[in-house]
Image (cartoon, rainbow, N blue to C red; front, side, top):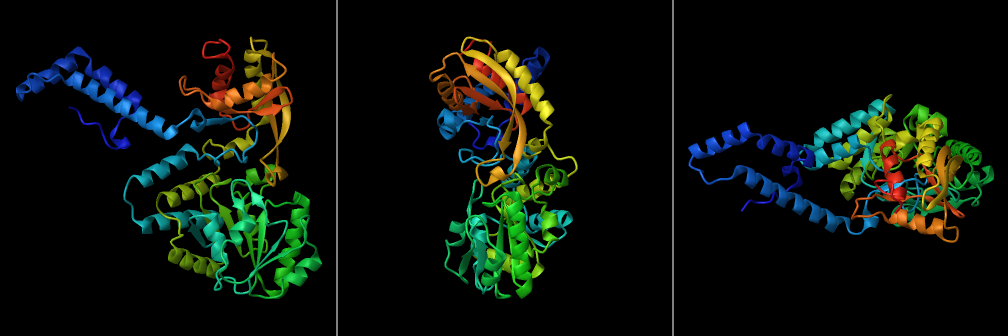
Amino acid sequence: MVKIPSRLEDLLHTAAMEKVMEVLHQPDISSSVREALNKVGLKDANPLGQVQNAWRQARGWIESLAEQIGGSARNQATINATGCLFLPEFGGVPMSSAVALGYAKAATTFHGSAAHNAMADQVARSILGQPVVWIASPLATLQLLRIAAISPGGIVIARADAVRVPGLGDVRSMLTSTAQGGGLVELGAANGASEADWSAAVTSSQQIVLLVSPNGLTAESATEQRKLAIAAAEKVGATVIELLADGVVDPALSERLGLPNIKHRLASGVDLVLVPTHCLLAGPSGMLVAGNEKLVAALKTNALAWGAICDGPQLVASAIALEMGGSDKPEAGVVSQLTTNPENLKNRASRIAIQLNDSEKILSAVEVPRTCPLGATPWDRYRLDNWAVRVSPREQKNGAADLHEELLRGCQETQRMSIATTLDRNDLLVDLRFVSPEDDHEIVEAFLGPRGETL
């Protein structure tokens, strides 16, 4: 009996294995293998049959394992045709293939932690020019700020900053999940804090002023509130820390969408920046902290004591994500799709609309421009110019809703991917901003079937 491999990396990719089988089936190769086996006394062996049998067993084992892990069709990969990046129904921002490969390689071998740490710190310093520490999670990072040794005078935060940020979490809840250290002072109203509010609350050099972006304000109001907070902190020598869920290192991306440039924020009156590595850096979950050397060292000491330091594959992948974000030629990925030319999206939408228009279930399909928020509040501060296919079903009563649900379910039997779209009254909007061009045919087939038959 042929033993099934116990590790995924013991198996060749299906396409590679099929090539091996093709070679083994060649007459001259096959006879040579048999001759060699005969010489060592294995006359009754059937090498081709054994290889085929082993591959069938292994492939069946992998498929059954995938089914167990994958569960229902809703757990399949999803094509994001909503036009938004940060929505509650998505599990996070997908990594690029380079980041995922770096994670996988680091996760399947032993590596010295010192080498990983040196590599990650060197990458961060080369891009940001500041001391850094990598922490395992946003929650651990915000809890560490409450330690008395770091903020003996407590933390001051505007109510407009104590928000729930999709993709990150509830800032207020994370801050109040530990009772350690100084107090937590919230000031101002939900629509902002005034100069008087900041002056009354920020009174000691031992306090930390925590800023959050994006927050519950408009971009203009947030900029003004930030200036007032930094000015109040400078008067008494308080520490200013900025949590940038929307922080990026790509100047072009920052300029085009108005996203905060991490390096610029460090140079504009802030002592530390906290950057979730799983938001617009598109890495694994964690937090990059950069800035004041003394504060970085204190956070690192306590993170090590808490077991909250980022290391291993999480650290490697985070460093790769940061390096790619600061590269002039970043690998194609979700974040790079933020800068896709709308004209390119228009051309793709037009081609899809032509294929879908006037079919059995679809009355009409036409490409339309739309402006989309980057995500749910407070991400709606950022707006994207997109193109979508407006699909009008022939069945007007519940046709769009039924089709929306059908697309979202996907189909395990036919390997059809789940597709998330947007309902707009009696129509469906299929937005292409975050759809890879190679997935356009998946959308067409989801509506019409693999050979053009309407599902």
